[in-house]
Length: 142
Image (cartoon, rainbow, N blue to C red; front, top):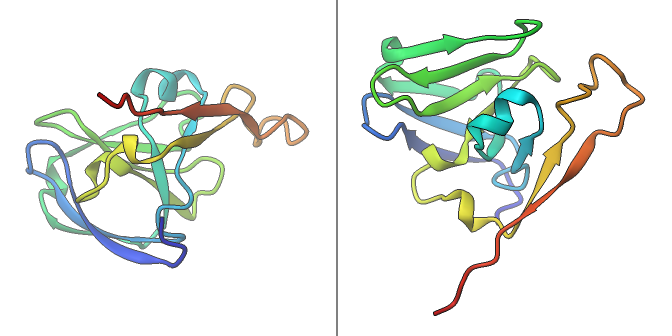
């Protein structure tokens, strides 16, 4: 994986939403979260600065979802339902971007992904462990 910032093309599943994203640390920040929403969503996200996403098509097709403290802003394509990105609660100056939306990248490209503790969010309890575990993917070689 790359260790320098990079710009990638991205899109939702149906292509109604297209954007470019400047990743803060390339693909090195891949992670998931253990909060109730992320448990159900199941996406792997990488980091971009707040101004790191530029829409080339379909920004108006995005739908916003917020829950609990209503700080984080989660965006989805209203046509295909794919989560594209979110503004983080833990750092509102950062975006989490769905790696599955990045051209040429799959969540299965990462043999191990950190799972951040979203059940006991650091904003609610700074002393709680920040990492709740790891997800591992081992390819079945046939």
